[in-house]
Length: 114
Image (tube, rainbow, N blue to C red; front, top):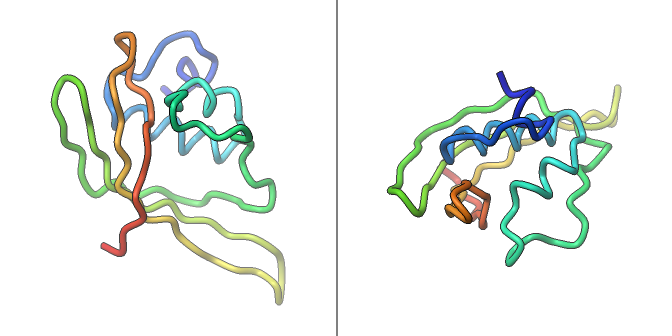
C-alpha cells in the first residue's frame, strides 16, 4: 500500500498517510521520499536516515486537523547495536503537516512524553 507513495507514483492523501509513509521511508532508508514530503521551509540540508538505527514499530495515538493543517501524534520504536551494545529507544512526537500545492507535507514536530 505504501509502495506507490515511496516510488513517487501517487501522494499520500492525509497527514496520517504521509506520516506512515515517512516512517516507512526511515525504515528502508528512502531519503528521496523524506525530502519530497518535508516542507522546504523546515527541511534540513541532510535528510538521510541514520543507518545505525533499525526501526521496529509504529504506534499512532491520534490524528486531527482541517483542510490546511493536520496533526499526528505517534511513537516510533528503534533498536541499534548488537549484543552487549544493543539499545532500544523510541521517538514520541506531535507532528504538524501542512497542505502545500494540494499535497500534505511534514512541517515540524515537537517531542512529547505522552
